[in-house]
Image 1 (cartoon, rainbow, N blue to C red):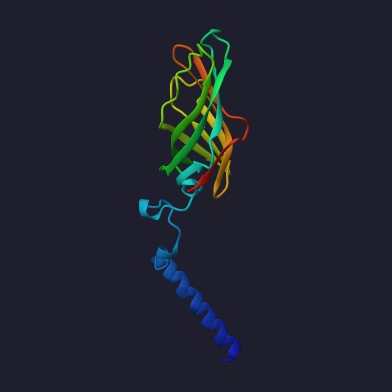
Image 2 (image 1 turned 30 degrees about the vertical axis):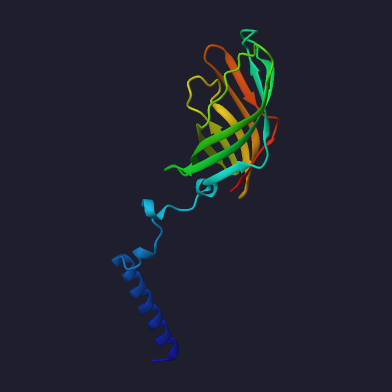
Length: 185
């Protein structure tokens, strides 16, 4: 038997052995898991955002109400907010829970503004699409449900807050475009 014939027989025998092991399930532990268990959850965008985020300085929030105009929102003042967000993952890969805490300073309102201040903390759902985070509320009093659109990197979240709700009358609290900047703590 020549060396070439011996080599062909060895390659065929090796291939048959590997195929037999494959069909017997010997390599199953090396394959990707289709349905991961809670202990083996893959790294996802939601996991990248988990943690505590804070503003480095107070951010101006503008306030509108229709307290005097009944149906037409009118600027009635502003306040500065120092914010802390606590972001936690959910069972859904691109959804996070966001607890928003804030402290208010320098509130300036016109008399008879009718503004009823937000409470702290508030709780929102965050939906991640690429490097975009959209905060929404399930609050039945909120007009659009969306309270903010943000872009994020590993250490910075930047975006615009725009919360609008009504109970007895309509109120809106918003920031200038991309003026809300939070950094990972």
